[in-house]
Image 1 (cartoon, rainbow, N blue to C red):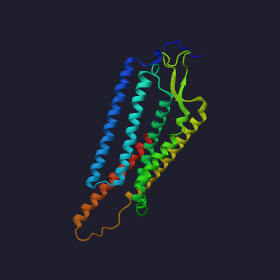
Image 2: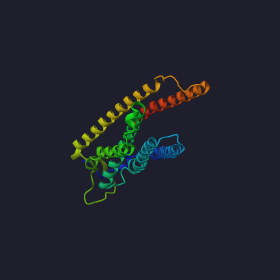
Image 3: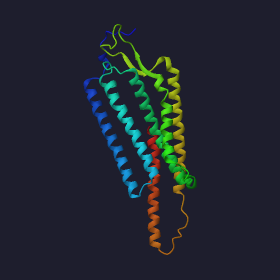
Image 4: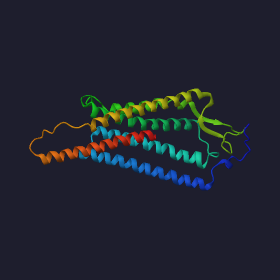
Length: 261
């Protein structure tokens, strides 16, 4: 039996810890917004200048948007309800369900956007003739729909649960929490397991595709048939090698980013 008369605020972090976490969260949020905004701006500039294909730009924009949504949905809510006012704020059941669904859906979308970008580049580099049949819009739409479907059970499996003192609708000290509901524990556990299995599948697929792309990019090119201008051929060869090295570095970074998620 939970003692509703107890001062539950004793379990909250100290004021100094709250301030430190607020500064840390704010810094991460600002850097995240700034970084993703720069990604969107630079991608669009490079596309207009002809240095980046529209399909790659679309993937980068979708990835940046999913990252921004994760930051904007997750961090302010967590900072307010979990750090500053864990026992004195009261989130409604509907708000709890919607928050859980949106946060998880956007998190899954970030992972699947990386997977779709890898798949698109894999076809372009390793299977260029099949690449022409790929529709980037459909690929990105599928990633977002799949993310929403995987997160959909959380609309049922999560909600507010806890103890409310008798005779009160809104307790003086909030003893209800946004969490997974005990009566839907099996559904919640199945949802989390499915998401984890999907993540492992995506991670393995991205690792395989990146490895295949790196192997193709590291393979020696055929003899240069451009003819007479040897200096120009050497210059072009140097540019191609530099481009390949940059692409390989990008693919290795992509694997690290996905692994960190």
